[in-house]
Image 1 (cartoon, rainbow, N blue to C red):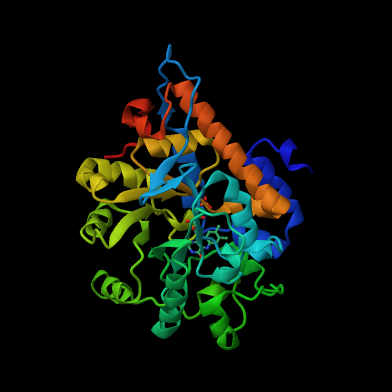
Image 2 (tube, rainbow, N blue to C red):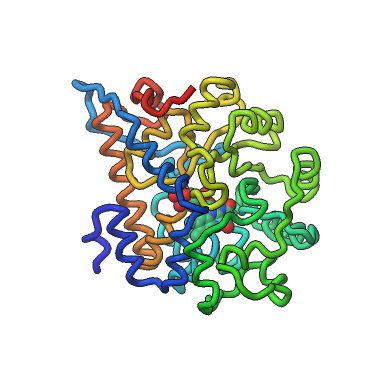
Length: 373
Ligand code: FNR
């Protein structure tokens, strides 16, 4: 179908589901165990109410903001998600093309299906990227990858270290198809080097995790990382106020944290980002001025984006939505996905009586229904 005829993210996902292979769908759609966290990630936004102010001039609306000092056109970014070429030959580069007109940050997965050089090729001046790292057991492989990224620091502006999946979650949709040939596209850098040693069987998730280190700690990993990159560090997968507080102690090396349960794909019944954000507001609100807090998981509507921003998030990531956009229509599908989210975000801001992202705050929402303690 023509992308313009698709009106919301669910419609785009439905089109993608018909077009991508069953194996790809199972990998993208799947989540841990009973997928409670995955569904809760989205449901929690539906329980937060907006508090629109009326009689306010809303002719103007500006969705731009800054992330780690970089100007971006929208407070939305592409979360790192592996294997875009399973959905479409344009792959991660197609995602880059799709978001180029929005001035949006794209964080590229450690398990991308193209090299980091290929992904940024042809990107617009000022278009920015991040590199997500799964530290490998063979540290030298990760060090070599970091060296490659450091060389492209005109494009790659951050290293995103993912902490919530030191071992893969149990994703049954994916596992069920472990005998169906994946035709895994060659993956970038680190993983390609592991290729020959990979054991057979397991879903795509299990396969990709082969070689990933499970022995990361606060004490040992950040000093190691500091030796191998000067890029700002973003810690992804923080799920409690205790860990958010700890992360803030590592500022300024750590410049942002991403509250995330990995789209529900790691530990099932782990909390949605909204709950962690509410905990932080209650127990350690001072960290909000020391590091940026980004969130991801379950974003389907502009109102979801705005609610996260009202709670203090600087940016909101989408994982599956970008992949399904790609599966539905290549880079045009990604562009349509972001066009919809941007337009919905604008409509929401205007109807709230807000002109700029920086004006959004807790006074624009009622989150009592989701506050638990
Ligand atoms: C992911 N995610 C992920 N995260 C990460 O740090 N490295 C990775 O390689 C991947 N790979 C990946 C693959 C697929 C298919 C999905 C769906 C997700 C998690 C991702 O960054 C993000 O946290 C979630 O996708 C956010 O939830 P939504 O937007 O998918 O609901």
